[in-house]
Structure formats: C-alpha cells, structure tokens
Image (cartoon, rainbow, N blue to C red; front, top):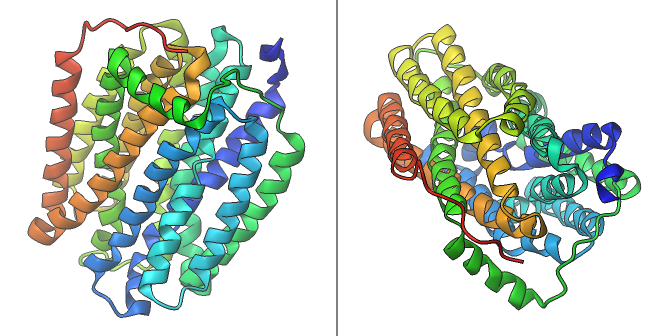
Length: 394
C-alpha cells in the first residue's frame, strides 16, 4: 500500500527540497577568499572551513540518518531542518574564525536531510521504479550542489559572505514549513533501541560485500569531487583568470548540465547491471582530470572538464546508491548511513588533500592527485568485479 503514496508531485517536491537543503554545505566554497580576508587568515587556513563542513556532514550521516529506520521520517526531517536554520544563523553572525568553524560543523551535521529523503522515497516507491525515483531526486540534489556555488558567488559579491548565510537560513526556514505540510508520513519497522540500531551498522558492513565495495569506490570518487571544488576557487581567483566570486560561481552552471543526467542513469540502473555504468563513470572521471590538467589555463577547457567530472560522478553515485538500496529494503537508512558516511569522509579528506596538493604543486598537483584517486577506485572496481551479495540484515 505504501508504494502508492509516492506521487509525481511528491517526487518533484522532494527533488527541490533535497537540492536546496544540500546546498547549505556548499555555499562556503566560492566564499573562501572573502571569508579568509574577513578573518585575516591565509587562504590555506580558510580552506579548512570546507573540510569541517563536510566532516560535520559525515558525523550527521553516522549519528542521525540511522534514526530514519526507527523514527517517523517526516517528523525527523522537520526538526533537523530547524537545527539547520539555527546553524546557518550562527555562521552569519560569527565574530571570529573559531565560531565560524563550529557553525560549519553544525551546518554539515544538520544538512543530512537529503539522506533522509532518499530512503523515504525508496521506501514509498514501487521496486520497479526505485532507481528512476532515486535518479530524479538525485538530479535535484546534484543541481542544488552545483548551483549553490553560482548563487553563493553572486550573493557573496553583492551582499558579502555573511549575507549568503542569512539568505540560506531564510530558504531553509521556508523549506521546513513546506516539508512539514506536504511530505507523506513514512513509518519504519525497526522497533529496537538506538544502541541496537547502531550495532546493526557493523553487521551490515561485515555481511554485505556489495555495500563495502560501493562505499569505497564512492569515497574515492567523492574525494576527487571535494578536492576539485575546494581548490577551484583558488585556481580561478588567481592568474591567469583573476575572477571574482560571482564569476567563479558561474562555473556551477556548467556542472549542472551533467547533473541533469541523473534520472537517465537511475532508469538505466533499473534495467541493467548498474555496475557497468559505474565502470563508464570511472573512465569519464579519469578523462576529466586529464582535460583539466591539459587545459588548466583555458575557460573552455575548464568548463569541458567540469561537465565530464560531474557526469562521471552521477554515473558512479546514482548507480552505487541503487545497488545499496536493493540489498535490504528494511534497512535502507542504515545502509545509506554506511554508504554515505564513508563517501563524505572521502569528500572531506579529499578537500584537505586538495589544499595540500595545491600548496605543493599548484593546479597540476590537484589534477594529478585526482588521477591517482581515480586509479585507486578503478583498482577496487576490478578486484571486486564478481563479488556476490551477502545475507540480509533486519
């Protein structure tokens, strides 16, 4: 009966809310130069803000997302949105770097709402269209990630970086009300304690080889993604480009073109082995870093590399997520917790690695690091090609 509760309007609304909420953790990226100047710190230290936001997201994934298998999902989404509003306001009024860093960790931890919406949608959708539904909502998520940089760049240039966080708090407050009154009720079936819920995460990791494989491949892919977008601001603000934050933000439009392919990738995952699409995605990811290395000083080259990079990440992430959700419908939030916690740990570490690579070898160092991480993902993909799924965990 529950599968009939998810209508087309719900899917569209979930995609929009997912994109606007996840944007909270990416607004800071085009603003890193402005924030660094505001607090009088070097850019390399300012780049730590991105790492802390993504680390907070990983913590939220680990401790809050599993509750979606125990609590009524709409209610959990609404109160998480309330905490997100408070965290964004704290960032907007931060008097010093320490307060800003604390606010960024909280912004990351409270912006895990998309990872509560996705399992809810998978739970309510019929099995025959799970991949397509995930792909449609992922399209909103990825467009939100990418266009957040465009919005942030323009708002930062005209209202300052604090103005962007005030705007984000207002958007999140509106979304809170929309989600409260439009999302369907979704009740999970886990009746144990929070402790027993968390212990099953270890069981899932131990007994689900597909989960381990998907999480590691995705973490390596996300590491390249985080590394690229963290360092792109510094690359484009320096010679030969010397772009302001509003122009840097426009590069998110190029990435959004690739994000619109997510429903097609999800539909493909419903009809064929999604692992094939993952292989294509890894190939595109490697090729994108080669282009970004060769055409580092050309706007057209950078745009081409960005489009390919984000299309590659759709192939990898949407296909992996479809595989993970298919393992055990009753444990989707917990499966998603393991998968996304490992993935965003990769993102945060990739962001930190990107700052180091840029300090050591500038933009070429970032591109070479991306190629190495992609090669590592290819190695995992090849070594685990014929691995079977493990037993289900309830």
